Length: 284
Image (cartoon, rainbow, N blue to C red):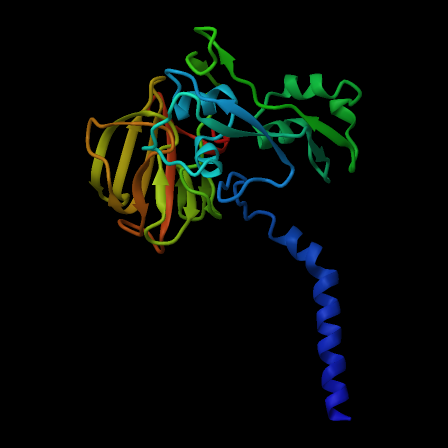
């Protein structure tokens, strides 16, 4: 009898956990994990084949097809030092059209920020939707983020411009957002990680500081072509030096807890005109 009572109690606990899961997810939706992992290729992606031409680079090919450099390398078993050969065939992923289902409280502006596209592009992709009358469950077509070729007919040689988009320097849970908190104003994003995890340059540029700063600990600051600066703090080690040029996605440091930090994480800032900006407005 006692064993039956225990069995019933366990069964009730399992059923409660299944029913309560969506509620628990809602309570924790403030914890945000960037959807930009490159450890695997999405199962709904399709592949196109690209044959390498003279003068091609991995960077140029990834920009021409609007695909993360890390993703191209992962799929084709390459790394940043790999040498391409003329005639080599690469697999380039491209996604099927994306659909976003409106949830309670969401606006077109929220969706545009989430997918790093403009509100006007989102409106054009959904002419049948009234931005002021969205309903829970409405489905929005999400257009691809666009790049434009400025110079040259060969896309792999063109100069590609984007809307000031940075890649995530570290993929992990955001433990503290930009803005006011109990201890004062927080000038960046805190992204949790394990000691030794790679921190990558969010955009190409030149290292203007690599060393130790009070509070920030071991820190790297990169200045980019448009004058913006990105800051990577609390590292355990640094693998770049002052005045070194780095490319987007290059490993520049390792996660740590140096300086004023309670645990291993990356403190990431974006500065423009000497003032910090909310990184979520710039990151992919």
